[in-house]
Image 1 (tube, rainbow, N blue to C red):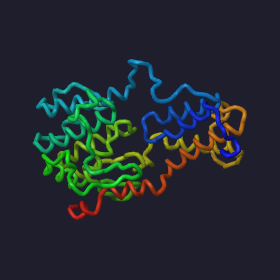
Image 2 (cartoon, one colour):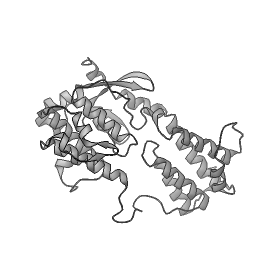
Image 3 (cartoon, rainbow, N blue to C red):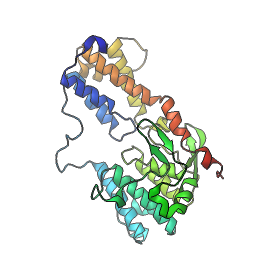
Image 4 (cartoon, rainbow, N blue to C red):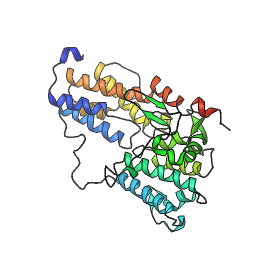
Length: 308
């Protein structure tokens, strides 16, 4: 289809670029998919990075800021019961209670959590402030692959014993229903604030820091435990509807008639964009081999020997 249609207009290329940025684990994924479908129908879009008005703040940013404020207060010695904040719908006092008694190791680990949230959510006070730069604990994110480090990163050499205890702490949960084991270092590395299950994942991390290593719920991150995605059924419905729009196939499955109306008259360009969005959704609902690699990194062999 693409070979028949090139060259594309700037508007079409911008819509295609938006499609390539879709991550279904993102807390705004459903909204972004809806925006893209509206753009396909209109043939143009004003959405994209950098289009938010100055001063606008998404409610999720308040969750991230409150999480950092509460954890910082705990490190500073404030009793958990006196932290009057909410992290999403959960009182900060409840999450901080998961940490138990303070210790130098716990404080070091909690600071890594704060650094992860601040850095990935672009909440640093200054881009040059190395104290707030997040350095991966277990993962190495290269240009084309993700690997695990076998030695303490230079950034953590001063607290190498804390680093080693962190990556050797094993959390037990399930992945797609099967028993699984995770390094606490991996879990902190994969604690993305933009993830739909951020607050739940944060609770798993804080409980593990306090030694509660059998998680009450599975840790969901990116392609891991994608079956827990709250809007999974909706995204499957969107995918089936897009396939019907593109190829006119009777899938004998439920489709969204309103989406078909929104897309309007079928054109080759619309079908190409819709097929691109459909493929992006389907690949993430049933992640291919790359997600298996990510799962394998959760507990590398050199850590597995310390598994309790």
